Image (tube, rainbow over all chains, first blue to last red; front, side, top):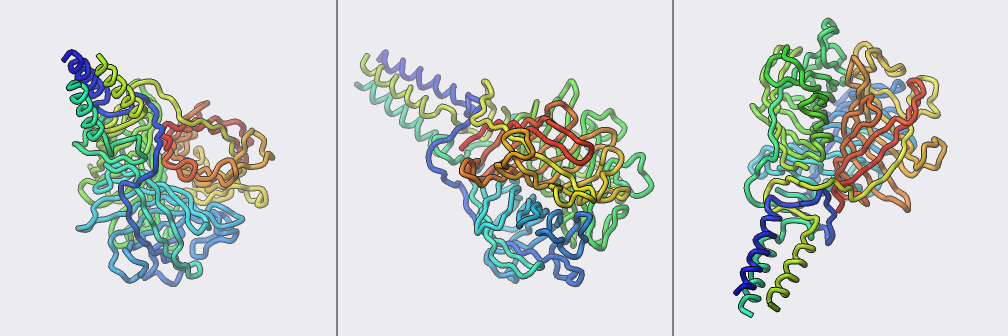
Length: 189
Length: 189
Length: 189
């Protein structure tokens, strides 16, 4: 009897101790397997303006180094080119599928001796299936797959954090590329 | 003996109660109501350089597509224009109120068929009331209100995460706009 | 009596099991001291293209206001200049040390009356010591030290969050600067 009360007190104080969450310490180190709380796969399609495709282009060069211009990507692996894009997002790898959202933001080429880029963009959804945004930032490379960060989200993706694995699904010269984006969220609210 | 069983039950239900939350697993899925740990409302004021207002301008076009320039926002909803800004933050919607900080960073227009923009910027505070920075990224739209992400913070806003709801409070042509920023932090350290 | 001890053991192991952890509510407010889960110090070196140093330059002006150009940083504290960089990261402050990674991304000058900048970049590692990226965003200033945010990471720095304290270690005119970056992660997975 006395023991029960002692234990109840212990458990209660434990509950209070934990209430409002967390940390109790201002540090988090997690052990155990990495399990996504949400996974999604999308494709997006980028058609770069080259002076002749104004109608179809979904992106445009808006910054260039002194030795570049804004209709042709610069030499040295396009180092210094800044591109703004508004690309359709599809569920499969067909450019002509009905878009489920828009990939919007910028990328900039940031290496002279081979291709790398820095990306800052959002997936913007406004359909019956998804409503809200997923915010991405990170480094793109020539690797077969590469990870960028999901740094935030709104709406259905409120406070999201995670990883997006990029795979280049198609490239046509300097004008068209298609990326597969495999999103794995590890913080879901 | 009975006491032990009671306690085991208590501890087990506690474990179940906590399972899926948190750490011990490398995944976080949160249930329950969304309660901000900190809320703040600010306004910021953007005066875009147009070739004639060098003295008052708080922002300038620094990138444009091939068909644009840097004193007039481009056609097609300014697609491709990149703007750098250093805008005063005020507590009310009066441009002439004493600034409590600076909104600094960039936005870029990223849609041809109607207005959307991508924002990356900080609120920079250095007063007796607040000291530190709040870092924002996300998608701006024509919606009456729209949410962007708080992706980090320093000083008084160390490790902040949350949402900022933007409301356009005033627009005067292409030269002036004022945004209300309602910040709701959901991670406070 | 025996029961109490059993329970104490259960509760204690539960406490250990939960320590460092997490969220049963959709809000997190942390008390207690701020203890980094990982700390690292690096240097990176930026050599800005000035029209004459194409071979050595690691960065280039790619955006400028209407009154600027892309080989000389603009007046008014370079307000509006956007710079893309691919800078070597070293373990000490010697430009000629073997790089352990690359700092890649952009900075933009965002204040007319004195120097401030906005940074978005990654540390990219691909060595035996580190593999992965750390993503940074935030406000740079003239202060002796200033904090920016670690907003994400991949690979060895999966899901990282924290702070990076920047210290200007050297400046040579408008062409060279070296930053010390003291990274303190407060979320480690």
